[in-house]
Length: 301
Ligand SMILES: NC(=O)c1ccc[n+]([C@@H]2O[C@H](COP(=O)([O-])OP(=O)(O)OC[C@H]3O[C@@H](n4cnc5c(N)ncnc54)[C@H](OP(=O)(O)O)[C@@H]3O)[C@@H](O)[C@H]2O)c1
Image 1 (tube, rainbow, N blue to C red):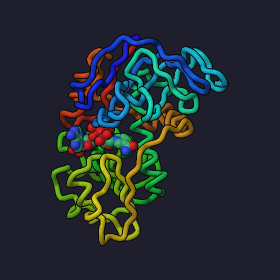
Image 2 (cartoon, helix red, strand yellow):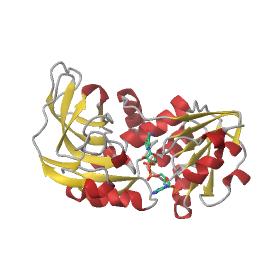
Image 3 (cartoon, rainbow, N blue to C red):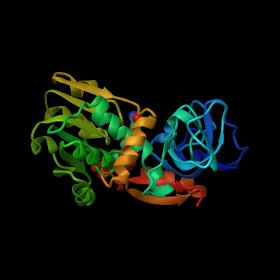
Image 4 (cartoon, helix red, strand yellow):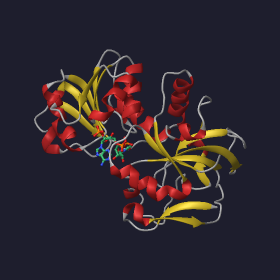
């Protein structure tokens, strides 16, 4: 089969398109014929201790074969998943995924749109609801709101009944407003002088915005981040809880997310689609600047 593999810890330049054997699913695992896989900025920095590694931790495809003991998934099922970060991903014709991570893909979307969901939407879900404890009526500020994770965070927070404030690059402000943000702020502005105190900041951008965020959080509020850990000196002296976390696969949350998608409450944004063989260009593009939504690799029709 074709597989994109990272051979050296030097970003997109370390990728090549290889021919390798189709992997065999072990007990509890499933072989998925991949139709599409999405990529995440910076993810080539994650598997550098286990090279060569196939990137793309989220995929949509069709179940091709079952490992021993798998009972709740059947050959031919259309599925989507966030795979584990300790194993090969979806930028290949086939991927082996633990059965426990697979969920039925949204019925109203094709594979390319479905692949754009798992990592980013689960990150947003877990940030807002598990780590951020966002309740209806609370105020949340999302940084990087047009990005892969941010565009889901705006929609999910709005759906939960929160008041949503969002920062994004100027060119993306209208798009973020259309996602449901109540207030949008240019990423270059001093948001902490404009925005009323919030219960939760969810940062997906890092940098200055993350550093300046404690100033806008009400006493007892929360700062949740996924891009980088909140710097200690930025948090010191503020009465808040700061959390950096790594997203975890969750079939149950993906089922809930697919239900929202099929009910018209949540839409993935696909910024660009590349054929599998152009993965290196796709990864270069992911590092090149901000965009609206996710970059997806099309693997099969
Ligand atoms: N810890 C975890 O479990 C976890 C999970 C998911 C993602 N992540 C990481 O979190 C970050 C956000 O993920 P994402 O998928 O939302 O990424 P993304 O779409 O590329 O970026 C999100 C936003 O970050 C800002 N940004 C800052 N530096 C950028 C750069 N060099 N290139 C492009 N945009 C940049 C942009 O916002 P503006 O336009 O407003 O400037 C962009 O919309 C990435 O670093 C990713 O690796 C971590």
